[in-house]
Length: 167
Image (cartoon, rainbow, N blue to C red):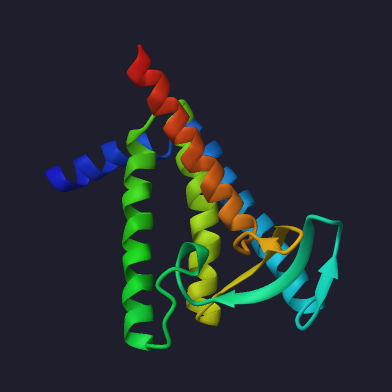
């Protein structure tokens, strides 16, 4: 019986108005990422689309983690990494629930992007990356919208922790 009372109390914490707003943000980011990937997958599959001197759209399939690290042809290793990423997302969700305003916003942005890439890893067995930033012959790593959100969220967390450490 205590378990049910405890669960009811915890659900009140989870379903606070603030959390619902941030959960909505997670879903919006997820759908923005999905929409951008579907447009590229359906329209730019085997070609490079020139935007300007610094940005191209070029679809590539990333079977590794960020920046193509740990790319492999081993399905066992791929599935292990995907499971680890899923566990990290669960840990992020725990931190999301326990955090306050700016941190909660940062975790929301990270999780929206992480869910987008995780969805692709499970659906396609790879993540579609397509934003190619370059200068002359130097090309940065190709990335996607989810990667942008994850990076922004991490930067916000780091800046917030830097400001907290100063005070």
